[in-house]
Image (cartoon, helix red, strand yellow):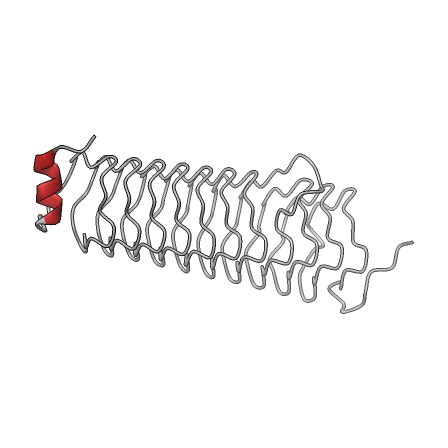
Length: 246
């Protein structure tokens, strides 16, 4: 648990808080704008509506923390651990999340525009209605992540592994992937019903067993994509026509 000394330093505005122990502390609505919190322990802390804009949280521990409505824009969050944390409605636009751990994190309606998720772990993350426009998720581990109605327009998803093991769950339904880069992405058995893939780069993307019922695939190049056992019922194909079962 947080020590009284570390708590006082945080509340008095100390900007160098590297490796402090603030676990379990109530720091709601506190400002850590531009502060150095590298390696800090913030596990299970109440950080709702707190500002970490431009802060350094490299390698910080935030498992189970409440960061709902927090501002982490332009923060360096590389290798930080947000497993099981609540980031609903948080602003992480432009943040560096390379190799960060967000498995099981709640990111409902989070602002993730332009964030760098390269190599990040998002297994089972809840990204419903999240804004991921122009975010870079190259090589991210997204198996089991829920992205219903998320906006991934112009996002980079090359070599991302979604790898859903079954259909019947609302994985990425009604999500916008317009203009996104899905080069070599692995979408085995992913539920992509009603998804917008207009102008999306799909070179060597693997849609084996995926459900693209009612998807909008206009202007997308699917010639080199792997489509074994994929379902296209009522999908709008690259030529603008609706798919007709043979």
